[in-house]
Length: 290
Image 1 (tube, rainbow, N blue to C red):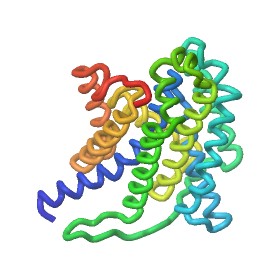
Image 2 (image 1 turned 30 degrees about the vertical axis):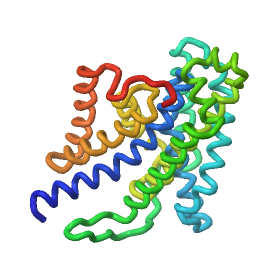
Image 3 (image 1 turned 135 degrees about the horizontal axis):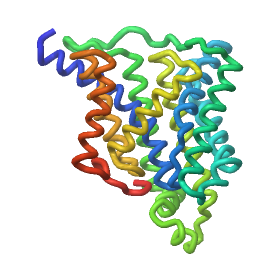
Image 4 (image 1 turned 60 degrees about the vertical axis):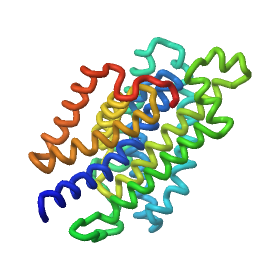
């Protein structure tokens, strides 16, 4: 494979990875944009989505592509319940309260998962082999995962832009008091926003478990990438999260190819620091709920 083909292959791998990072970050950014809450347990919901998909496959033979029929509604309900019982209590409190609450929730989920399943690594072997396009080899499972992420990202984007409830979410993100004065039930909006964020994280976990192994502490690595992606694109910006995810995926893959995986991850955070020095608000900047 020549230099130009290798460059194209590496770029393609970065885009495929960046699409999943974007999905993880989009839910985190949406929650912050509407509620001003940093959900430190976001990675644990990703892990739970992956583990749910694994157990559906291991116990019942359900394809990971069909398990989303269970994962999405299940985690929409779970996210709504968590928001109403826990997060809603600290939404109007100082930001540190919500951060500490979600931090504690993160370790509770990890501990419970370890008690239930141990620390074993689990994955779902699915769709082996690659698509061959000229000299390019594109892993089938990564293509399917990218398409799944792109489909959900697009669906949520159009939901926010076109639906009545999506517009209510955006209005609440931009100015909660004005939204309330217009008759919008902001408590319901916050519940539904958190539920959507949790469901997108769980869906990302369902995709990732086909690519890499899941274990109770796997979410901690992804939450760091999600935070980097959100800050890179602009806190609270849905579009910025998508752009940040793609950039992070490309930088990580190129760094890993030309040096090592550790250098790739370090390079991604170095790019984050450089961008923030140039544009402290991120690439897109803060645009609540957009």
